[in-house]
Image 1 (cartoon, one colour):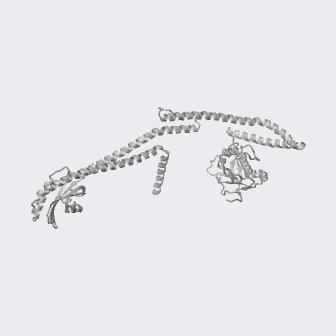
Image 2: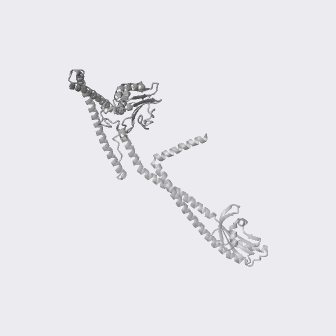
Amino acid sequence: MRAARARRVLRRLAATVVHAWRSSLHVRIGAITMAVAGTVVIIVSLVLFSQIRDQILSVKRQAAIDQAQAGVTYARDQVTGIATGDAASVRATLDRTVQQLQTRAGSAGDFEVVVVYRAGDREISAGRLGVVLGLPVELRAGVHSGGQFSQYGLVPDADGDPRPALLIGAPVTEDPTGTERIELYYAFPLDQEEESLSLIRSTVVISGVALTLFVVGIGVLVTRLVVDPVRRAAGTAQRLAEGELEERMAVRGEDDLARLATSFNAMADSLQRQITQLEALSQLQQRFTSDVSHELRTPLTTVQMAAEVLHESREDFAPHVARSAELLHEELDRFESLLTDLLEISRYDAGAAVLDWEPTDVGALVHRVVGDFSALAARHDSELRVTGPQQPVIADVDPRRVQRILRNLVGNAIEHGAGRPVEITWAANRAAVAVTVRDFGVGLSPADAQHVFDRFWRADPSRVRTVGGSGLGLSISLEDARLHGGWLQVWGAPGLGAQFRLTLPVTSGAELTSSPLPLRPAIVRRPGGPS
């Protein structure tokens, strides 16, 4: 249980760190500056400390060697003529020599002296026993072979605790036969050097940390001086994007940031003027469209009544006059449809469109639309294939607007389907209901798919339209879907047809997160063609 809690805490901490790293320029620059400065300080500190240590030990070593050489000369004078056969006399001479050498201070500091007399397997030593026992075997072997040798090692102090020391040994006298010899050893404790190096190490560490923090502080301060104006500019830009066109940046000083603020304010002024002009133009266009549509209603009604009389009496006219009456009747119907679409789109532009919500069986709407277009599909030699669940799919929608969307989609699919089948599928889950309309006609390129919902846009202007004709059908359908809080999306590929998907929330006001049906068909092919 504790392990799981610790893992959750670590995950939250990692997520917080990642979020801070990705969202804060201060954090990134501070961390990068600390890493770079810390690395440089560590390298410089190691090099500096190594040089200081080598220098201190070098001075200590040279002073110790000089003192050892002087001690060898003095000891050689003291042991000249030593009675080697008398052990008591030898020990007394060695003890006296050690005592005299201990009183001869030098520049190397404190020291311990050991004199060793060796005659065959017999050995007599003078000096503190701990130092004698602490002499390394390698050092004694080197001195025994002749010449002066030095070595760093651990030597017990008066309390028996090992302490670092510089050990120097040299032969004092040597019997030509090699059976007797006297060796002198110096042990120079390094306590003072260790204390000095510890102090220097602490100073270097504290100075390095302080220098790193100082550099990081400078980096963060400089970053803040640059980032804060940028943040203010971003906040101002966001408020401008939200519609607060009067928002401006404060201009302080004459530096680059001040010039940035001045340029930003000039850009904001230009955008405000252009947006105001566009809003005025859009309002004028909307009012013009609405006024013209309403004004044309009255003369259109009169012309339609006259055209209806002529259409009903066309059998009494000459053939060419009768045909003219039929054409007049058809074109007036298309003109009325165009006026209706213009009035509808003007209501959307004015924000006056409202929904008449009611629980509706979406499947029943689909079957109703399919029935209305069965005759048109037969004229185009196109088969309408309907797929959906058996049980009713009830959703809170405006049935008139949803039916208008489906009529536009099915009509376009028949018109552009090139006589091939049109597949209408619907499905639902707990949150959404979706309807797809799939044709296998000429299809859409990626560029066409981006403009298919634009007003008055046609993929192939040379085609003769048999359904609608205003060029506003899909635009109105998209607005109807958005008014429901839904989606109207399109997929297409040249030569493989197109598929439109309408997704609506089951409950009015709910937010969509997914669709029950895929936008891209599972099998992208023409009926009967290769997959």
